[in-house]
Image (cartoon, rainbow, N blue to C red; front, side, top):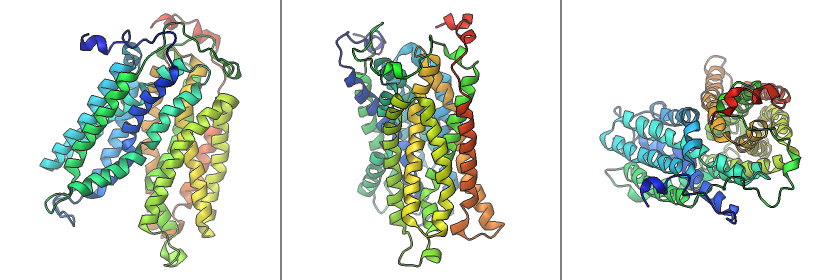
Length: 460
């Protein structure tokens, strides 16, 4: 068998008696690896000490310079998903997963060269651009396959895979920290070697996922379809070109963008936020949140982010996608409004509890959206449609951190607001954004039949 045949869709078409529960582990292999991007911040501080080792020198990069790697990666995730979505549907999941592994893991080796030569553009190219393309391809590659294997539980199926993306940081963060400590010497902070080892380990795991993935035979249906009637299905399939001409696509674009904007801004600033809102100045030295406790808080958020992806997407199979998003926005708006009150009353337990619930809905929004698309547009090109919709993630990745960071800076530097109160305005704005998202979600209706009868729908 040639390599081309090994990677083709025909080779991975399963027999009619294939156990579909063997497919989610393939998706998890990919998403647990690419989810490392949520833990990339563990490299930030060491990357600012490459030359000085213990203290940064004037020639070392600063945090703002290094921080662009994460932003570039997420931007390229969304854009590559949109650009290559139709290609993914055409060539199938195995070839897509293979290319994703080459890009994502190859990006680590290019970034390691950047560390060795101290050239920041190589990190932008490696972990940023090339790694971001690998992120995009890896993120959408299992979606269409899982929905076709689980038409009775599309929310649960995609939730199992996308749960891995949320949990990738729980593996990537301690692994990177341990490796950097292991490779650290008086002449090196261990970043270069760590990137090379992680690139190799991730490549092996992603190849395993590509090897075990299968697609269902034409016309296959599960024996248990008890849940299919609970969701109002699309009357027939739309192509991606037809779907993007419907108002429903743009309403969903706004729904996803607003849900992600609210969550990602907080996720990127969680450690600093909890330390400033519960600082020694407001809590006293004995009750203030330490740096170590803040790191634990970030880990806790990652855990709830991961669990929310499975819980909410599975629940959506029972109550419907529209009601699930209605809960995200209504409950989320109330919780964000309560965050400043938790700080004003120095209630740390309430603060942590609020954000744990908020992060479940942030992750749940990602995991539920593919099934929402399937309900509206059918499953023929749901992977490609999902890829186009992920441009909303790219926009939110810029909008969310800007809202949190710049409004905070304005409050502190211009209005001279104490740091512990500098997030109140941002939280109220986030609450308002979720109210808008709630309205957009209410406006979503089944796609009008004229969009299904358009000749473009006959194209593959």
